[in-house]
Amino acid sequence: SVHASNTGKWCMEQQKTSSARCQIGVAKTAVTLDILRSGRGALVSDSDVFFYQHPIRALVPKNPKAHLYISRESYLDTDDPGKAYLNYGLFFARPAPQTISFFEAVASEFRETLEWDQRVFGRKAQENVFE
Image 1 (cartoon, rainbow, N blue to C red):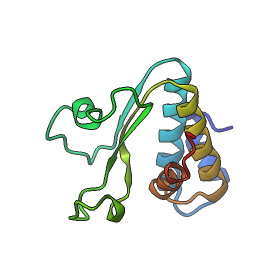
Image 2: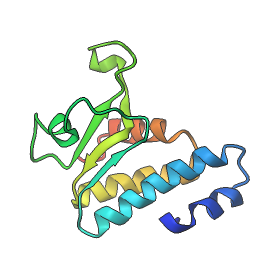
Image 3: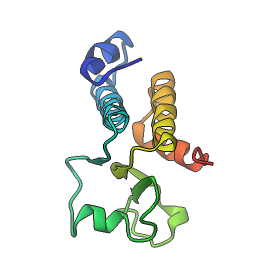
Image 4: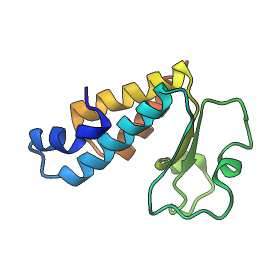
């Protein structure tokens, strides 16, 4: 298991050329899991996200009881949700067993594939892990 404090060492051991990308993806997932396991909600935002409004109000309006709120990429210039993908750069997660299981699945697949964290996150969300 990779803990948030040892992501750099783990990524270097994998001897991957995309060490920086690896460290960001592993750390983001590990920190999110640490926060959720402590019983707290996690609002995660990459540094390149710009807020036009309060992030929680922007993410939560349709279902205030959901466990995970995810923004979608908007630079694709489309209002068709089928043409946009989920944004691992901005989400709010509540500390629920389903949410923890979801992020454990993301972490597991990411460690196995070292694929782009955005792609792994979106794929796991589309697999209906919560059902």
